[in-house]
Length: 254
Ligand SMILES: NC(=O)c1ccc[n+]([C@@H]2O[C@H](COP(=O)([O-])OP(=O)(O)OC[C@H]3O[C@@H](n4cnc5c(N)ncnc54)[C@H](OP(=O)(O)O)[C@@H]3O)[C@@H](O)[C@H]2O)c1
Image (tube, rainbow, N blue to C red; front, top):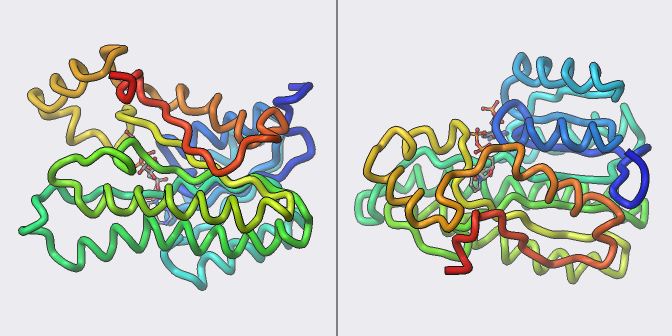
C-alpha cells in the first residue's frame, strides 16, 4: 500500500493479537506495510498469526505476555526494542468480559480482574511503549474501548467502567504526549462477532434485541474494525488525537 494510509517501514505492536479483533487488526496493519509484534497469553496461537503475517511478506514477532502484569509488559517492550529498535504503532486491544452479573452479585475478584486487564493493562502498555515513542518523538497509540465506555449495559458494570476508563485515559495521554508527536486515540466498536460476544449471540432474546437496536440490523465482523485502525495508525490521521471513533452500525445515531 502506498500513499497516506501506508504503514511501510513502521513497527506495530498489537495486544490480544491471537484471535478476534486483534488478529484482524494485526493482519490489516501488515497489509498496510507494517512489521508486527504480536502479544497475548497464548504463544501457539500467536505463532499461527505470525505465520499469516510472514506470508504477506512482513516480519512478525510473537511474544507471550499478560498485559495485566507489569513485568510481562516490560519484557514485551524490551523484546520489541531488541528485534526492531523502535515502536511506531501500539494497539491496546487485549480485553476480557468474563462475567454477566448485576453489580450486587459481582465478586470483587471479577471486578478487579476485568479492571486489571482492560484498564491497567492499557495503562501499562501505554507507559512502556510511550517511553519508547517519547524517545523517538513520534508514535500512534490506539486503545480499544467499546460502545460500553459511554453507554451503560446492565450486568456489565466492571466492563463498562473499564472502557469508560480507557476513554478517559486516552484523552489525558493525548494531551500529555501531543507536544512529543504521539497521537493517542480510541476505537469503540459495538457488537462484533468474536469469542467475546459468543454468549450474547447464543442467547436468542439478547441477540435479537441487539440486532433490532442496531440501525444496520446486524452485528459487525472483525474485518469491519480494521480500516479504522489502519486510519488511526497512519499519517492519514496526522491531525487526529484524543478521539474515540465509534464503529457501531449506527447505534449512537439513534
Ligand atoms: N467483540 C466485540 O463486540 C467488542 C466490542 C467492543 C469492544 N471490544 C473490545 O475489543 C477487544 C478485543 O475483543 P475481541 O472481541 O476480539 O475478544 P476475543 O476474541 O475474546 O479476544 C481477546 C484477545 O485478548 C487476549 N487477552 C485476553 N486477556 C489477555 C491478557 N491478560 N493479556 C494479554 N492478552 C489477553 C486474548 O488472547 P489470549 O487468550 O491468548 O491471551 C485474545 O487475543 C477487547 O478489548 C474488547 O473489549 C470488543
